[in-house]
Amino acid sequence: MSKDVLVFPESERPFLEPYLLPHNAEIKNSNLPFVTLTFATSLDSSLSIAPGARTVLSGPQSKAMTHYLRSRHDAILIGVGTAVADNPGLNCRIQGVGGYGGGDNLQGQPRPIIIDPTARWDFTEEAQILQLTRNGCGRAPYILTRNPSPPAEQRQILEEHGGKFITLDITTPETGHDLDWTAVLETLKKEGLNSVMIEGGSGVINTLLEPSFQPLIDSVIITIAPTWLGQGGVVVSPKRRFDAAGNAVPASRLANVKWHPFGEDVVLCGRIKS
Image (cartoon, rainbow, N blue to C red; front, top):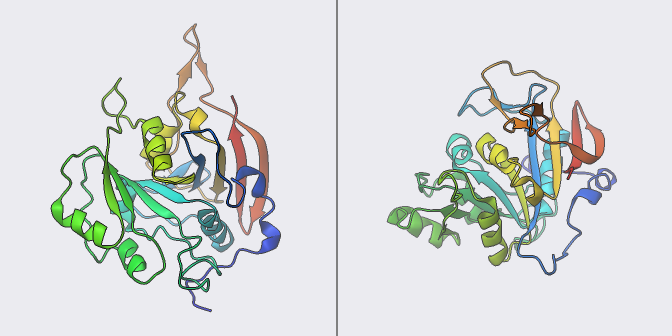
């Protein structure tokens, strides 16, 4: 077996099932996909030790779980900052999935989605995500941008690999800056993507956790590593909320919570409490 292939035992999968869209299911009468918010964090809620610094938090068991989750979604989504910093593959390496012992087709391989409002990701054919596409081990990304004229060279490279730029207004009319998650998710559903796994980075996660967008999240699956990264890390923390009297109140809370150990890590599953 290739060292790149990951195994996630059948015995560990039932724990996750209540928080996932059933196999091959479609959401009827909805213009939105099923949305899973998932990421790995330290004990001090940090995704990385510093901005732009790639930080490994997940152990081997929880890493395999994450790749299994990818196989259960039509798409996985990250922001451009993560794409630039990590040069990610954004594929699924679970044994039996297309390209990893699952035949020549791409069944089980999710479509990568990159949120890149200004089309600033200056990728080349040597980007890991495109190398995996050429090797039959993943799909080319769709890049969502509000730039009406993304760079011609990047457009050509992307289309030659089966990906594309999608231009739309992905900012909220109130601020002209923050992501309009309703518009983003409606667009992905129109592309035939019935389930989306949102992996990061912090800007993407924190904007999605804004009160107006939290109802769009169907499930939350978080890997917690037994480490503190220390002050100055890149933190997941929604903006503070206040009641009518001006008193601070919790930003959000999860319901239907379950915890499960994976090696030294612990995985938290839940749903946003309405």
